[in-house]
Length: 227
Image 1 (cartoon, rainbow, N blue to C red):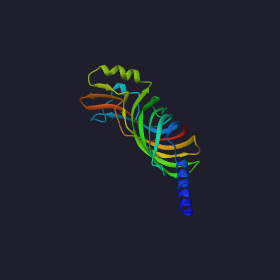
Image 2: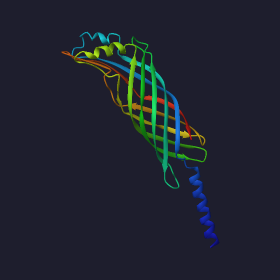
Image 3: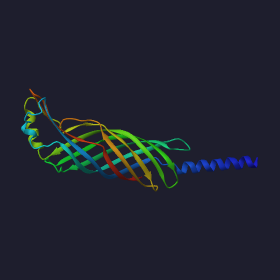
């Protein structure tokens, strides 16, 4: 009987320790830096040798560097009684990117904002440290601006001409995360925008003439504070 009680006591103590080291539910905020490449694409209709619309004369196709930052706020929760390694988080975010192409092209600003959800898994779960990965997606708006925006906007009143300075975006989000103390952590990840849309579009007899700005895979690193 003594050994049975002792064994139950040890099991109960282990259970309490296991719960104690599991990551806690709660509110978090994060912020950090981002980097990506922006692809500027110009569509020239059916005939490649045709002159492009005057609205596109200040733009040149190519790839350029975009630097920026990200701000996030959300809530995370984990499931289970003993090993709480699986969890989810929901969050709102704002990303800003700035691009000054080295080739002939205007400076670009991209504002991305929305809400998202990630699946979380901790493969290391210690008292002072948790390490794991995350994956998920977001529903976002992406708003582009540049020095030629006012002129492009003025052309939208003509038949067959349209502009989309802001449009719907679905970024996929994957990466790794680590809590190095009760309140502090870091994460490094990738955001992959899936939607491509015209910034400017003009329909003519020769086809569609358009201008597109598209971010490629976004690399980011964030500092995380857990409340």
